[in-house]
Every structure is written in C-alpha cells, then in structure tokens.
Length: 159
Image 1 (cartoon, one colour):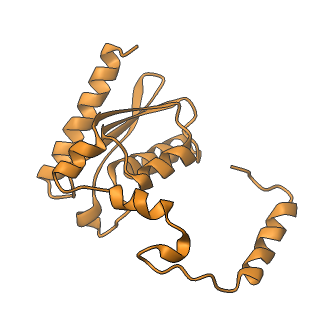
Image 2 (cartoon, one colour):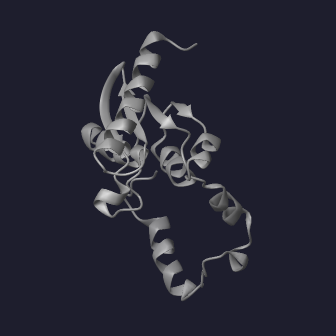
C-alpha cells in the first residue's frame, strides 16, 4: 500500500532530479534513502560535474546512507528514485540490500530522452567473448590464490 509519506519521498527524489539537472551536475535523476520514516541520505546525478561515470543518483545516495549508518548495507531502508534504476544502480541496490525501491519514471521513459541502457542488458546476456568491449582473462591462477586465502581468512566480514 502506497502512503502519503511514500508520495512525499518520491516527490523529493523528483525535486532532486531537477535540482541536479538545473545545477549542471548531471542528468535528470534524483534519489532519497529513508529509514524509519526519515530521509537519511539524498543524491542527484553528478556524472558530468564530477567526471565520475558511477556518480548516478542512487549510487551517490547509497554512499551517503552507508556512511551515515556506518554500514555497508541498508537494512530496513527504502530507496525512492526519480527513475527506474539502470543496471549499475540495480547492482548497487542489490548489494546494499534495502527492503524496497520506489521509482517514478520507467527505463522506457529514460530511453525516450536519450538515457537508453538496453544495450547494457544486451551485453550482459552475451557470452563474454562476444561483448563489444574486450574482456581478456589473464593470470587467473595467481588471482585465485587470493580467493583461496579469503576462504580460510579468520575474522573476515562476509557480505
């Protein structure tokens, strides 16, 4: 059931999308993260202003929220975002593990204004050797030695 608070939080995400766009920080995307009915972090797209292709609204907000909570997970948090998350943000959201995501615009709406991420979904479905960017496996056995150490590491923090 969608509440009046949910509507307020999605409205704030939309306001942030416009704020970021108007300040020339990046594209028209905003996000807020809420815990226990209170906003704990906000973000808007800062890709072009920070020269950081990962500075999408959701990632910016997730980084701030995790810092605020002193945790790498967003237990019992809800993300409100002005647009359905792209594949990168979707991955970040799943790693952060909030309990829900509310979004305003769809990925189809984003594609209509030039933010089409369908090609990334297509790339993910391809065999690695058929992707448009070359992925070259190099020195796997050396890399696996560190993975083996991780398996037996005492005091590790699993996530």
